[in-house]
Image (cartoon, rainbow, N blue to C red; front, side, top):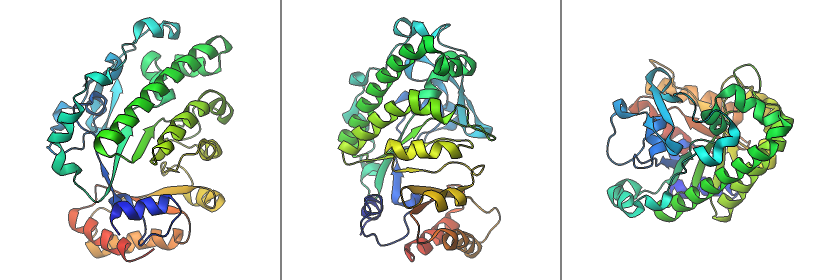
Length: 317
């Protein structure tokens, strides 16, 4: 069984051979698709200099890369009032992308037995923030005067994400889509589960349904303490969510594992030997084995440690 087959079977609730983990995936985020470069996330065949991260992404948004957090923030706002979106936003022209050239340039990288994954930057709430900044975006979600505006904009965004996902699948064989939309801070949700369910969930569901129609998979990314939002993520039909350490992952897994698959982050243990890293990962395995969990193993783990961990995970189920 290949890593792709192992992860596919796990996600489809079929028999798989080893404990599913991020090593079963290959992330593909080429520099030609400007949101990847702007957000500081390039994964492709040729090396990319992090000094070139940031700059202009989709919609003409300017992003500043912050090395300390390994991510980017927007510079300014793109419009004064959300009602201006039809006049102010310049939508990405996916027809202008030379998809065949990207595939040719990455043909060796994409020749893999792993499941090819990519990311959609950015979802609905985060994209709203990038347009008008946080305060106005948060108000727009609860202001009845903006309800139609927000839903119309989110519908148009979802159309774009559906188009993007379709092209990534058809041209590069992408089967796993990680969709970013942060709904929480380190202490509490940024928006209520009720508002999220009313204003965002219908659009999430439409994208999830389309990705599933291609026999592909959807992982919802959301940082923050969002315990009360997990039922909405489950209702959307998303295949998984990882989340951050501020969440009580063990509690959530124990509560929802029979109806949902959780990704659990396994951090790097600085200074550990390969054997110590395996014991560290085994402590996570002992906690979650038998439940619908996969491991997202830190890419900061030294190569030899990562190899030993991968061998251990291949030996258990």
